[in-house]
Length: 261
Image 1: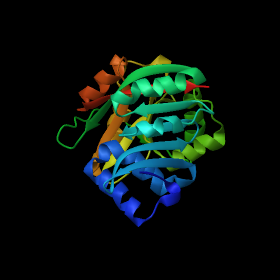
Image 2: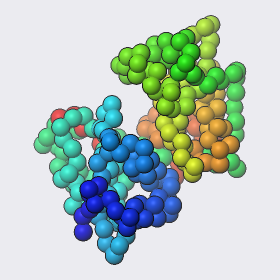
Image 3: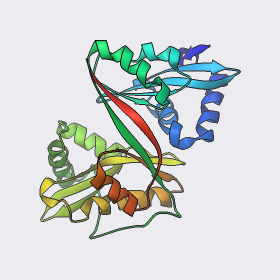
């Protein structure tokens, strides 16, 4: 049986919470988007025996992000094809079907990504200086963040930069008055903080700054009682070395499908 958000009744909501509590690291995006990003979210569920056994989660932010999880063969044809999208295929057996559906509709690139996690026991903090929590109310922080984010290839304006600093938790390293490295928590749930947007200025790499800012946001997550979760391309060996040094370990490997219509 298929159910979409128009049928999000108490029974379905209980199913979502049961699913999340059974594996927060896998389903954190599902629960967060349904609570806090409902106006940007479409979801369709496959139900069997009263339980959710598969779902298609579509989040329409700056780019479309899709999660296809579980027994979701009947949901592949609902993946949106009207704009650039990232499709995270949680069950590898569905990859061929996803590629077969999207391939005729545009350009595809499939890249393997690792899910890495760290907890209180395995975390090894690191610092080569002071990581600063960036503040959306400080004009200098906003301007420097805007410059570094644009350097990373993300074209945003000042208003968007301010919004990101207000809604996410970013740490940064300043050198010679310039913001040279950043890392953030995309959002914060009691059980899991997804960590990302780790980027260092080209002229300041190899000095431990990325490790320092990632350590700072990771420490915040662990102090809150949550685990820290991040995703990294399997061929990004420098980043993987950084995360392993901090105590992150790989828990799964998934294909990500990048689609351009």
